[in-house]
Image 1 (tube, rainbow, N blue to C red):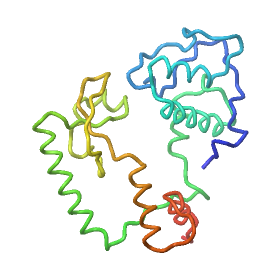
Image 2: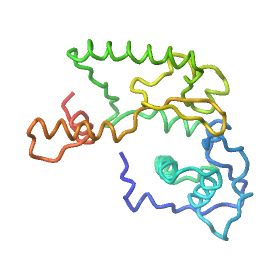
Image 3: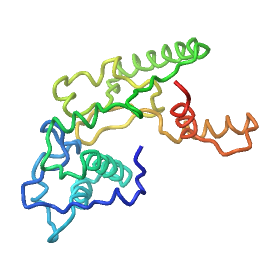
Length: 221
């Protein structure tokens, strides 16, 4: 994975005079709820960098700084993946190559599921489905889907197949759609649980969720 702090990640391309649109895939804006229109309609300083314009577009639509950092991070990775080509020069084919590229060493890895956790996971999914059915009766069952998918299948967001395996304890109302949704558990919940498990196991070295990722990626095939 590319390190976001790597100096190579700096935005080195300046905005061209062409009509650069907000980040989009196959014609759909990646800024959910935002109208797809040229970023050039936003106020800009001469020679303003592309990622600065992306930040302006996100802030215009009141997205959080955390969301802004995520968008900028992935746009940087997309640009670097294609040899620092400007996104205005690329299209759907480049997006597809970036999203379906092979894993490290040209080998995609398979996530392991220990047999010992299967019964407990099955019970958990049964509980999640019961909660889903209760939410369905109250109309609070939507989950957020990629924009292109939600347009093609407008009711998919409330189907059981698309619900989160580890749903959040609370629901929220989406400002753009007015739907009451249930998101996944916040990552900090898992981080706290892993930290507590490390403490109970008596492991003296620092360990985190990221440690588990590296232990899997570096394991022999």
